[in-house]
Image: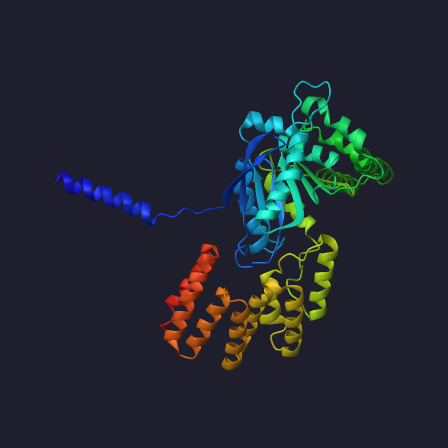
Length: 462
């Protein structure tokens, strides 16, 4: 009896191992650095369409203290990109901190006369000469790169901005620890900032004091002090006017209302106003603490960075609008990146659904400008054709799509749906099975796989 119980327990444990599957956020890689003379581990996140689009290249976000920040940052990136379509899909590279002592040393710049100096400049050289070329050679990375860091990682980012303002397209410093060694980073700022200095950096601050950000911004933007004088001047001017008004009219409520509105305006400007500096953009998040400010900072910075990529209406009324969007994106980023699927779906299935001539014209431009989106665009066209019972035209289009893109699981799925409409259920079942296998090879997200599995499950249902 005891042997049977032991056997059952063993089987139970093995079954739980067999049927449990790890949900992965990315992969682990490493490279040896000649600059640092050590192995450097990295974590890499790939967007949902990474495997589907063989020739698509993606922007890359490099984050400091990658092991600590990787999960929340990549989750946020997926929400804002493939789900919300506020930003393009991107690769995220998390640079391992290798432990607190090593990480802090790596983030601190070397400044003469400071004992606690680090080797941040060598780490920047490692990123520039070794890590970026490694990523661009091994993965489908574009040459559009961003760097982000939090706290002492933010100090690293600011040091990188000042010394290498063009190395990255954008820099994000989240609540940076600029207080380090009595604001020693300001010494570097005084040396580097001049009329020719050009970069694109984002700085944030939570409900905290003593981070050294204010004094740094006074140096680099030359506008913070002026802004604060204007902001508080609004309240002072309102108070003087209110006193004068009351002395003349003896009516209380209007002067009180004026002062209240002025104080409210001043408070809003003080806490949420972004100084108008082209190099350093700043935002304060007074309802966040030092550890929670990362999410709103990334959301604000990335949405601002990619405002020219984003299609605000989430549809195109014409092919000309699509071309204009492409031209704007190329002009700003040097890359078209991925075309938002939601925008294409809204355009084909709703806005231009009955305008066949315009859709045909758009199809030509999609093939020219966004070739990686053509297969998906064709499945949308096929959806319209199936809805109109134009089954032969839909099948012809989908087969043409599979001829040049044989790995398109979406085309197979649409063919399966077509065969169900035609009551060719065995063919439909075979096609959706192919779609499922292709989707698994592309490592699609589980919710996408669920759609395919549901199509298969419903194949024989009426």
